[in-house]
Image (tube, rainbow, N blue to C red; front, side, top):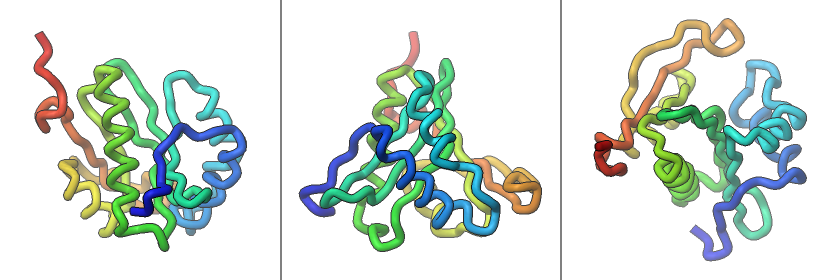
Length: 161
């Protein structure tokens, strides 16, 4: 990873770039639900955070996490194709997990297209388990794999007591 790559909270002026990345690399073939307005709403939502990996002044990846009492939902996560396999996604995911742990989150859930073998392998290699298929989850047409990680079981959290 380049030395100039930092993980930070997204700013308002990042919303358009994040939305375009989602449309281009995540939502391809599904329509565009993660618009700049929706990303901006996430930035204002106190139960969410939007993190970006900024490398050489450009957004190379992003993640949007929503927090509940004991669990979090990784709603959207992506890394630019030319920035993949450089550790950026791993660092970004670890940053999001660390924030979740500080918040007392025990479980993280997410969904990935069943056809996205690379994403499924990425999460499995980082301690996530596939929990089941959600039929027609995406746009009523494409199946998703529900994926989760128990932070406490992974040794990431101290036991509750």
